[in-house]
Length: 454
Image 1 (spheres, rainbow, N blue to C red):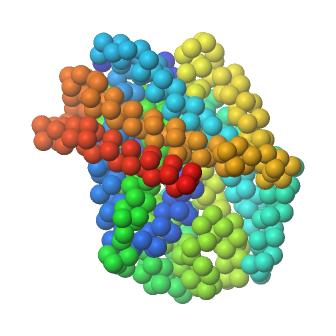
Image 2 (tube, rainbow, N blue to C red):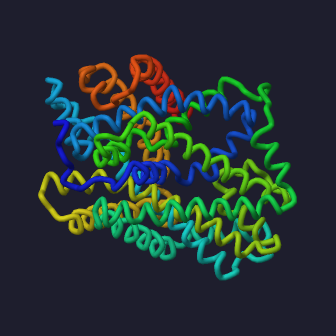
Image 3 (cartoon, one colour):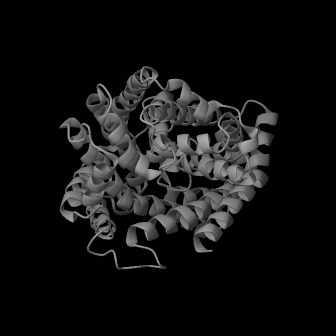
């Protein structure tokens, strides 16, 4: 099994995999959510707790996902089945792969709607629609977008086509080629926006908001927030990392690769915060506006600043690229499975899945207007899909992957794939994946469900 090759191809180098996995991890949450929760929960003190959670929860589970994917060289569904067979386990472990792949696919259906909003704002910023706009008018513009299924459908359709186009190209001509262009572009846009922010006049205030060491602001709730974000930010439990791991070179170090991905993901989130919050503070606006920060507060802020039209356009372009790289990884696992199961070529496989996910997305976008009265468990369709994926499917998948790779797989398999250079490193991973990570994910699972359903 060690010499097995993926029928889908393999990454050209370890760094391409790192960039692709970072692209999967870096999404909308990094750019608006992480900086905000950092500032609200103790700044630098929260960052330390978060990094601790990444090391003890995110990194071990990511290593577990990658080792399973690389061992089998197949889609998550078949990778779970194949490694279970090698270890003499029940074939029903493939259900874990199913949960992850379906979760990623469902997330893509409503994520593309939000990405469509971002594309709408790219166009709006580029054409100067937000110059000198006020908060009330910005809020009205956003509400008008939500009330217009025609506009949302247009952007949703375009975004799905963009994602399908990349995934249809396969690992080398699609995913790798896109990664080599989009990730450097994302880093460049981030640095340009950071430079603009440094000169905005309130950089010090933004820095203090993010990095002032305020341990008194840390509570048990803060630790739970850090724990939850450490799990969700790395694209765990949705098949993406396992699929990407199946294209990874046999000689590449899983441990060092995953540490690099975790560091890059955190760095992007912190730099994004330094690029965003000085602009917010320079305009005396609320940094705690949540999702409204991106679609209402920031357009107003950029619209009132010198050069704001250009840099507002670049900001939404940055968010759009981040959304695109994340969405590609959401569609890839399902596409890989269709190719393996039915022998289809990449284009029809990705195209078929694209049509279905496009139809699912229509239900989500209609939940903001024509279908707003349709409720599932008291939630609109968009919120319901977000709820079942984020609060049930992903934690369940992450928990099962931790138990599977830590307890069920033979240590001979995990030692061979991880190829860690010391027993201490391997035993540390084993301790984290067997005991710390499962307990942490279980806490996330229970607390999130309780908060949502209470």
